[in-house]
Length: 144
Image 1: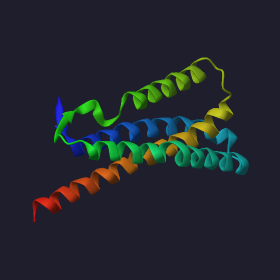
Image 2 (image 1 turned 30 degrees about the horizontal axis):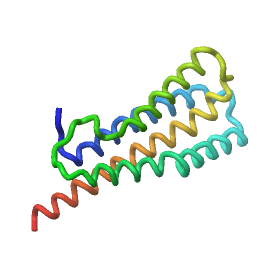
Image 3 (image 1 turned 90 degrees about the horizontal axis):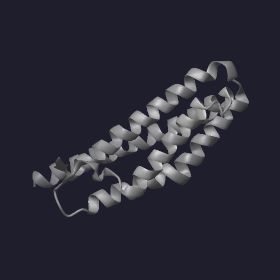
């Protein structure tokens, strides 16, 4: 199935927002028993590290890649490249393994998942912002 180039940004928005929301939800469900100022600060630190060093750059990289495509209609899974899908698969497998195997303590799930989930959700929202900008730019060019 082929979609308009800008729609790839919307797909990235939906995928990362859904993943972020789900991980954030898991962290927040575990949080009440571990709610302390230190844990909140640790969650903020996790958020900042992932946003600054991983997801912020990922959003910029994939938005630029999508915008550089010359074709107007592309296969709908081209919103990410193979490396990004591999990263997502490793993160999902690792997260499921940590929880299902009981390897990570509940406090870790609360603190880490809350920061990670919030960062993923923000990355998804940034893709959504970039989609809105692309649609607005296309409409502006079309109206000239």
